[in-house]
Length: 300
Ligand SMILES: [Zn+2]
Image 1: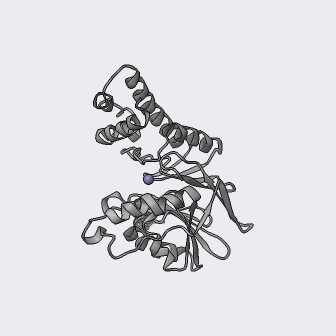
Image 2: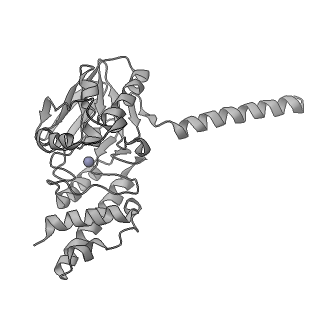
Image 3: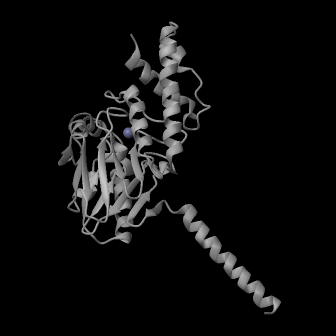
């Protein structure tokens, strides 16, 4: 082979590799197992929550509806992977960034599924959050309506067609009252909702029904499942180490507050405690609001 052809072949190979690299780097949509897809959230366009879907023999099950403008982008991504009907959308919890886009899917014939506690929260706190919206422009909710869950479960329910199995398991109260996770035992994939994140801005710990101690127990239960892939509520695709990091961060926060109260410190003093050594706690302002939220729960 002469040198010119060799060089051209190498250049072609390199260009091809670059394309593959660019696709895997830039696309927020990833197939994590046959028929199991994840779409990572995009904070810059106010659709920060991760979502996913599982393609069963006869239908598609979506995990987390996102905001309506996010759902409108997720829908065509699902359509690229399957033309089966989207029959179910499981929301891990009722918070707007995970659940407010439900209507985009119910318009396609889907039903919203979540835990009974989550369904109750959707109709109360969720509806109140929706009604409070005063946003204008692209991120206004005015053009949409809130689709409440029509299927709910107590402790668990499962979708199983022999090919895929998805178990929905109540873990709350933790981040909210009705937190539930989606567990795929065959593929060992866990969708955690906001019980676990791995971005740098921590979790919203301020839900009125949050239970921070039980949140730790929920993280232990999730770790005991020994998942290979953890699809966190916000951030990148993760694994067991992210459940552990979330546990360490959360435990540190709760401990900080308890010790602060025991030492007679004020809420503001406690809230200034530095937790930025945790990767998910690198945003100081978010730590302050989370520490205050935990303080409000634990104060004597
Ligand atoms: Zn949330």
